[in-house]
Image (tube, rainbow, N blue to C red; front, side):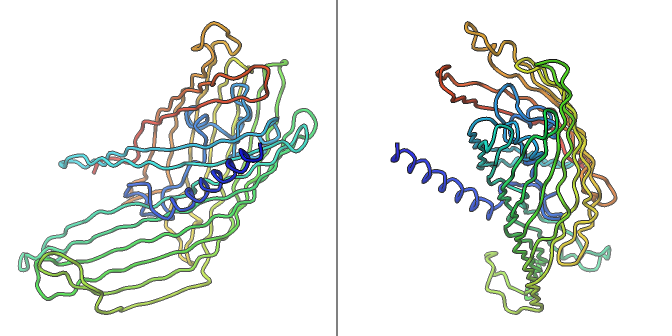
Amino acid sequence: MIKYTRLFITLLLAVIVLQAKSQSTATTSSPYSRFGIGDISDQLLPQNIAMGGIATATNTIGGYNTINVINPASYSKIGFTTIDVGVYSNIITLGKNGFPDEKNSNFRLSHVEFAFPVTKHSALSFGLLPYSEIGYSYKVVKSNLGTSSPVDTNAVNNIYSGDGGLSKAYLGYGFGIGKHLMIGANVSYIFGSLKQQQSTEIPTLYGVLNSRAEQNNHIGGLNYDYGAQYSIDLSNTKHIILGYSASANSQLNSKNTFIVSQYYRDSNGNEGVPTDSLVNSQSPNAKLKLPQINHFGIVFQNEGKFLVGADYTMGKWSDLSIAGTNAGLQDSKLFNIGGQITPNANSLSSFLALIDYRVGALYETTYLNVNGVSIKRYAATFGLGIPLPHDRASSAFYKINFSAEIGQRGVLT
């Protein structure tokens, strides 16, 4: 038994290191990740993603323990040691009027989470999951040196790129007060690096130096989440659950570096060593101010049969600032609706009747406003919760959860 325990701990540490290292290289390919601190992760398990992203008022789902980081009050419902490890893949189609669509796909470990009960109505949880990602590379070509003058026909290439991301390591505790009220909180350490570059090149004008502005942010600091759930019992199996949770507007430490340099490209297009640095500015004690994010949710649950619910989230992203500079984002609003049904959780003759079938939808006014256009996001979601065979006399329960989201963010231009 000791050998197996050691093997499990070794594999666990390897997975955590892999997850942390994966955030040093971007696993997204979206030009929208250029803004702010990148694409923000939903921090949801597949169970919740498949139901449109509802999470604020959920705890046990389909009779199984669920580690719901969005609302740490839900930990109080965890009655067994729970481990949840997931993988994530996305396929993004970038479209523009008059041009062929471009597809990008990425694959990564999405989360590693653990929870175990401390008392009958309380539990501790810890884990590692992504917080944000940056990953983009595109070029904007402007003719006539970026002017409308027909005198000079040389084109200017403005090249934008970025990569990196932030991870979130958390430790949380949730407990019940009486029969109906649950309260919980997480303390998290958010860390990682964000790198962004903007280059200006004139490839047809020989002898002209190209220029590049590069900004690096090495970030680390504490963040806090807290929440509550209140259960209204209509019967032994039917409940209405009200939920609220929030992520505090804390400040993270940021070591900010800004460099402007010049460089050549040879006749084969290969980039040479930078010839000069025009600006080399470092701010070792800069701050990154995160916004306050509020979640509200309601769920109606008939245990072992079905669950339906809705969420509403408000993010004060207009407060986001990096090294004392406002990021220029707008406040976000997100609506989620979804649910699941289990035909017969106690069926002995039909395996299909044991499966959780999930569906949902979401609509979001994101924190992005690009060229005066507020970027919207909408999607339909669906998924399955498939229980694995187990000895019904034992206390071990396993389930594989699949989810998918199909939607759109932004518009063709």
